Length: 121
Image (cartoon, rainbow, N blue to C red; front, top):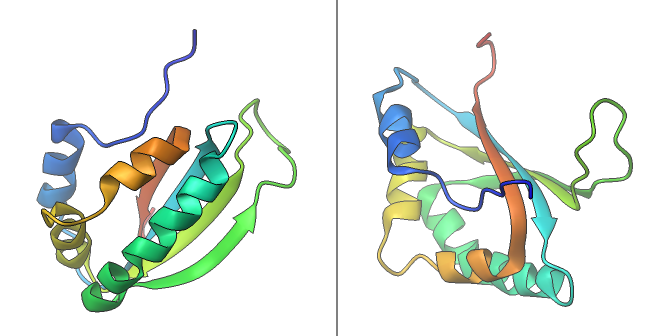
C-alpha cells in the first residue's frame, strides 16, 4: 500500500517557520480526491476557505485539472497555485482554530504541498 499525505507533520511546519524567506511565496497544491464525492467535498472546502484567503492577503493564481502525467507515475486530480504575501500569512491562516481543515481532510485521498518562491533554487 502506498502512503498518502494529507496534512503536514509538526516537523514540516517547524521547518517552514525556520526558513529565511522574505516576501511573496506560492504554495503548489497537488490533490487526489477521494472517490465518490471527494471533488465535491473539496469544493465545499474551497468555498469555506475563501474568507480566510482574503483576510490573509492570498490569491489563487491557478486552478486546473491534472490532464496528463508526462514524467513519473503520479497522477493528480487537481493543481492549485496560491500566492501568499509571506510565510507568516500562510502559517497564521492555517493555524487559526476556526480554519476548516476538516473539510479538506474529508475530501482528499492524497496530496502534496510545496512552498516555492520566485528566484529561489
